[in-house]
Image (tube, rainbow, N blue to C red; front, side, top):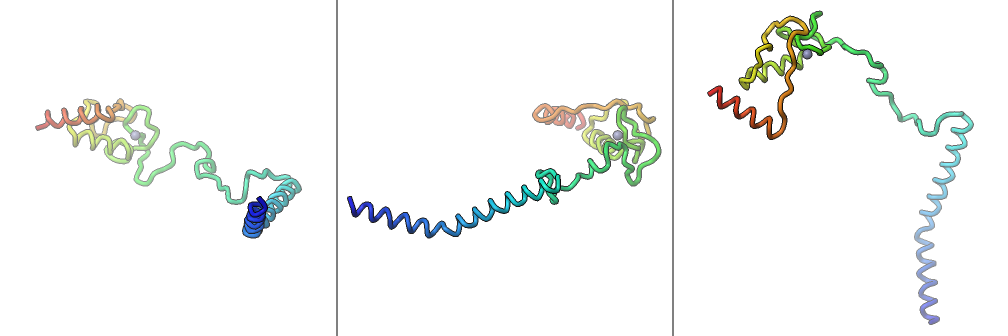
Length: 144
Ligand SMILES: [Zn+2]
């Protein structure tokens, strides 16, 4: 019984000796935390918004639409509902790439012609996933 108590005391003192620096560090951190809280309270600033927080580009620009893109013309994109300026063959960069992809895969709809008037072409939603792969394979089979 007494041997057990002696061993426990030894272990306890050893553990306390080992974690003493850690306890001091934690105490120091807590002190710094309260100091920071006091400072922010004195300055009247929100403690959540630190100096490391940056504003995003989007928030700085606000919700301004139509940022000018290099190579864009004054003419709007041929697609109905697209706010970007035309860049190639009457289409904006994104929709010109879609036009090229549709032409390459033999799936170009009737309205999608080059130099179509602005806001005259109806956008198409392509099937995704397994349905998309099926449609693409069918289009390729017809092409050959
Ligand atoms: Zn477009």
